[in-house]
Figure 1 (cartoon, rainbow, N blue to C red):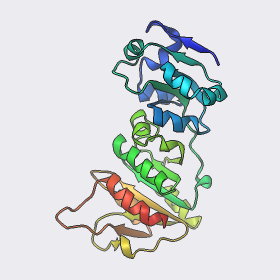
Figure 2: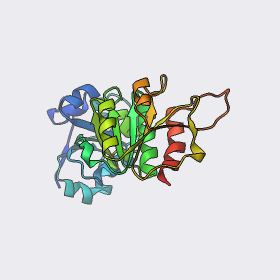
Figure 3: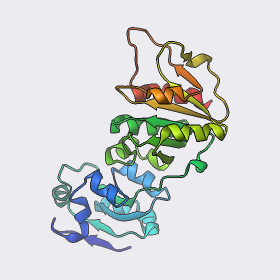
Figure 4: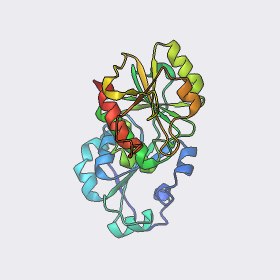
Length: 256
């Protein structure tokens, strides 16, 4: 395993780490992954590793698996790394990787989580982590939802994005109709009149649970295309829970 030493920030070998903007990475179907725990999950997945930039301590600790990945490895002093990255680097490692491919609708498992219009990377990352925790490993995002492969989402998910598979829907209402034809029951979550209380709801064997945006909830046409609407019974004065918080409650019940 060859380790390349970087001595100045102008070294073209590490140019990808100089500008860590999700937009430019998306154009090349690439992602940036950082921090030891998150990178460890990345390395243990099937995701293609393109380049590793890390402190020598990290490289020594994970030398066996890094050698298996056969990707270029670069290191530098802590001061140089912080100059290159542009902020104080506490975790000692950043990896450039290929973004995992979105799956097809036919590859979804029997239990599916759908995100409708969520834009907060923190909420999405937490929801992904919750979903993986309860082994709900098929996720659909619509075109209005922030990519779960955004740098902040990956970090907040603690690398659990690499445990799940994602289908990106360009027309969610159309895809819901297709899923119904495939035998899925479509279940929306909304604290509204007529919704079924979660503790008394029995999930079918093939089902999709939809969680809506933080500010607006699930879109009205999506609600209309749902088989059932469920709610978490909470105090009326509270009215709504945070999307990530409510997802953990619903996903636990969904996983039973």
